[in-house]
Image (cartoon, rainbow, N blue to C red; front, side, top):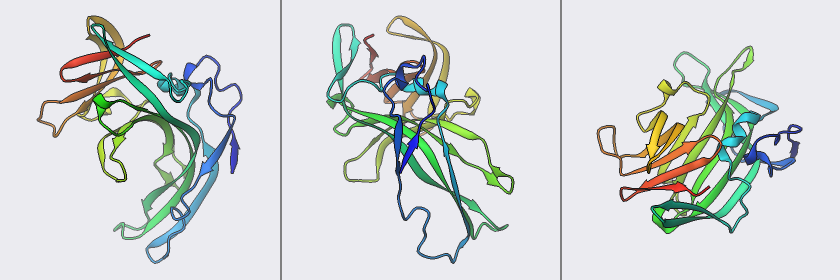
Length: 240
């Protein structure tokens, strides 16, 4: 299935300049077709496509970097190259599961079609597996009046090869008030990294538990994407 994107969606946003005009729907056919309806009250199939807000395309400003090319990060002259190993842009069919009785013993499936795009990059310093950075949109609520408001989500993760286990996975609503984010993420109105001051930066912390000291950090900024990262107490920043 192909879906047409919004017209002029790339105007003014560097991350959207090479987004596809027509999108394939990536569907897991088991997702909304359970083998048994015993615990399912209803399946609602929302055909309308949920698109990411145009302004939020710019959270992945480097999306147009060609596969095989490098994005360079530096620390006092030392270079780390993140090689772009993959990227894609499509409509993802997803399933929202809602309780349909007071005890939540039975469920209602709300099947929706959500725009998604991501890029993957590889470098030994961040581990053997590729790191994925992307955007998607999703609706989390649905009632008799129809679907609730759309949420645009930034995603940053590293999944172990041939496994469902993640070394780390961050996902946050880019339009949510900053106080609502978790202890694994911190928003900085101002932050100084390697002697340079930046504004409006999200810090993602690799941390074992809420009381532990982070052993790695990623810095995310709209208009750039991955601004920088901290490894072995060294901070590498994108070489613009």
